[in-house]
Image (cartoon, rainbow, N blue to C red; front, side, top):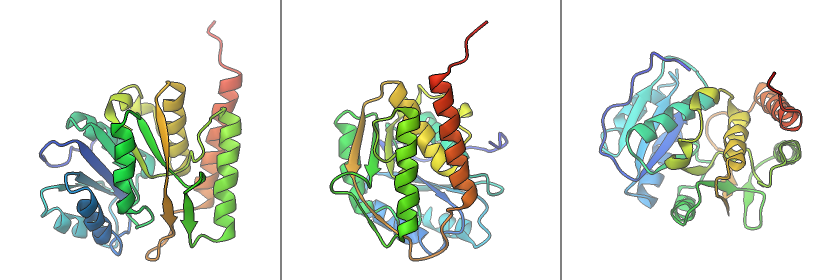
Length: 252
């Protein structure tokens, strides 16, 4: 992570901070922000832009005319994992109770966020918006994307001995009191791997976890960030963590 980053501008403290990492999301960001503020009007939003060349950062600054919205500009494409790690720390430093992970491309429905927050307020330290349980569904995904997601989740559950049904989901609510148990400096994976790493780490710590069914909608604007590299990183990470789980290092 770039340690030269400075905190986002001051904003009034609240209960919920929604983290929105962005890279080339100018077509979808305004509607995403509007949807969140409509369905959870008391939430604050922190947009973390990775130097988007398409002007997303400028649009984010315009959206920040609303005092509930703040923006943090990073100098380049530093990745999803470092964006969320930085945002988690910002949420803790600012005194928020809940940090929300949510895509800025419209794939996660803002109308479903209140249900995830309700589960967190009921006592869950981590709430995962889950596609692969009854009530969950995916709209407009091709068969191979479904296969990759289902297979990846199955492999991760087996390798990590996890009971979670959607380890790669990026729609989540985290209680910052549980985030304090994680060493965010050690969470350096990206994409699916970051989602797997954080959920599994909290599961191993005994964090109470709730899975709430969601509808995932494939983006209609812009380009997906899915790549072979992201899939490979997730697989390599899962196999590495699974190996360590079964064959822990012994202290001399």
